[in-house]
Length: 218
Picture 1: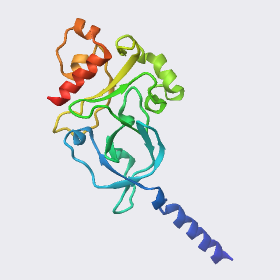
Picture 2 (picture 1 turned 135 degrees about the vertical axis):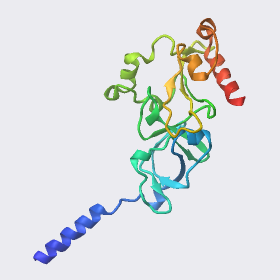
Picture 3 (picture 1 turned 90 degrees about the horizontal axis):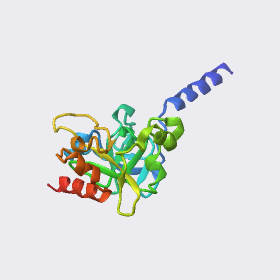
Picture 4 (picture 1 turned 180 degrees about the vertical axis):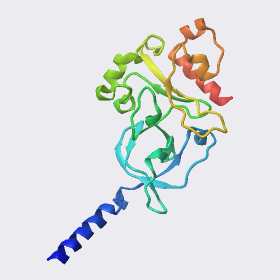
């Protein structure tokens, strides 16, 4: 009887220590950029795999990431800055100061010298979920100042939009740049431009989109 108990205990310990892998039918292949500068330099990882927890037109929520060769989990301390899934680059919202959302990756509208996500009216709620007031979600974020004057960019239809900006960083620095909302106060600093305060004040959403595209094309 005692030997049976010890056998059962040993089996339970073995099962608890054995990693719970994602079933093969639920695995999807991804590749990772483990820092913003690796994205800038196109230094991409080998193929890993994960599972899709939730998916929308502009975002995915994923589970743990595994090395495809060894089946070992990628450490959470190695949370990638971005992943490539079906040839699309998704940027990790964990590194967003305004819309911090762990496990959620979003397709940015611009990826280059400047990475930009255009958060238009009616944007997917998962893109905007999170922020500094975790328990309150987007409502809490808005109440804490994201709608301050200067962080909205009005388009030709009269709608207010926001622009999330990332500058990938210096080519010799290994780190994850955080995305920040583009405002009239940080405009020149974030985009490395030299517009006057009056010019920036009068920019429309379409003007800013054109400026960011021009920066990435030059």
